[in-house]
Image (cartoon, rainbow, N blue to C red; front, side, top):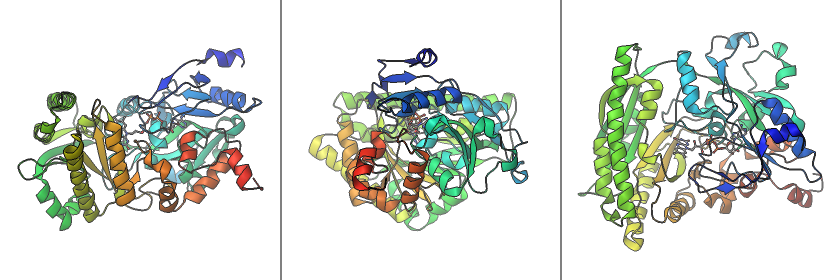
Length: 510
Ligand SMILES: Cc1cc2nc3c(=O)[nH]c(=O)nc-3n(C[C@H](O)[C@H](O)[C@H](O)COP(=O)(O)OP(=O)(O)OC[C@H]3O[C@@H](n4cnc5c(N)ncnc54)[C@H](O)[C@@H]3O)c2cc1C
């Protein structure tokens, strides 16, 4: 390895994901500063007698093994700038859009701040802002809102470094760039093709190392939020008679939280509604509003740590009551704030720490009822037979249909049902695996790529049968990565690609 690459790398470095359920010590851990560094790393890796693999990590906030790379692992965090996308190179029909170019390693928190300075806001956010933009993209990170895009649906162009260190810019067929004005020298070949784009945009780093993205964002906006309690019997009735889905379609951002435990004959639920305000606040008014959530947010945090302690102290039987208290404390009426304040402050703060599995279903209200009542049954069974407890409420979120090939929301409005557990929850992984078995095998769920989803290693058939465009995705992947440089065990174990050895054995033409 040359001195230049030595200077931006270390060996014997053990990388852990943030929840610390996944770790790896790669041959070499790199800190690239720009796309040229990435290109040199790929050339070095592919140039070895036994070629090495190259993988990138973001903030390590995936509970799955998506980011693991055993040869050359790249920490992207030094590539953390964002700027307004210059209009000159755009096709005339796209010049009016609010486009921002962001480097791949930009953490969402920093990106949101940079956007705010430009008077821009993200169209949607998940519950935390610790992820990098490329990491969040690569596993299909989403928030809630049946008409509000998940991260992959905000992307208009993806720039990556592929085999031999070549640069590519990939866009949909009707892409934002004017091919006649594309800077090939700087950004390599421009590919405007739906199959390529909708495959690459959610690909776990298996089609190359992303170095920049162009996102379509919004002029900064304000939201008003209310969070109120409802009994499950009432929510169930509203789901069955269509009233709840009407609300989900009418209100900008809607989500629910359900207590998996019955207390006094019913399960408590919290409903969150956030609506875009037709006005923006400036100066003192803006500051005053943000103080309110800080206080309420802290209150919920205290309850969160109480639940955690109870779980450790074998007093977990009371967890249903404590969850009820936490939900009661998190009620909010008429809180107003800038987009990111409301979207993040209202997050499922109870799920900030710990581990979770999340499951996608068609956004059919009857399915929601079936899944939630099955969760009640399993939570009860775990408690009665094993004295094991679910340490958080169950969040329910809504995501619009998308064209992204490996999104679990491909071509269907989707509901995501999450099973988060706090750190220290007794038998956390076993509880999650019991949920995964029930959800995947019995209820037809598609697990979130970035959440704990090991059950899928045993159920490749679920992936093969569910994703209509899986063959196209695999063809595009093979074309983008002819050398197998960007593979890892996660992708192979999911059945999304074959090891080159397997490919040779099974197909004499490869
Ligand atoms: C507390 C918590 C809350 C969460 N909340 C939500 C939520 O609300 N909604 C939701 O959908 N998900 C949520 N997640 C899951 C999380 O958003 C995703 O798993 C996301 O992928 C993590 O981003 P990251 O930057 O940490 O990426 P990592 O986990 O480090 O990597 C994710 C994938 O991206 C690839 N990758 C990263 N950078 C690059 C690059 N530059 N080029 C190519 N490939 C790259 C990695 O190889 C890996 O395959 C949550 C996770 C945690 C821990």
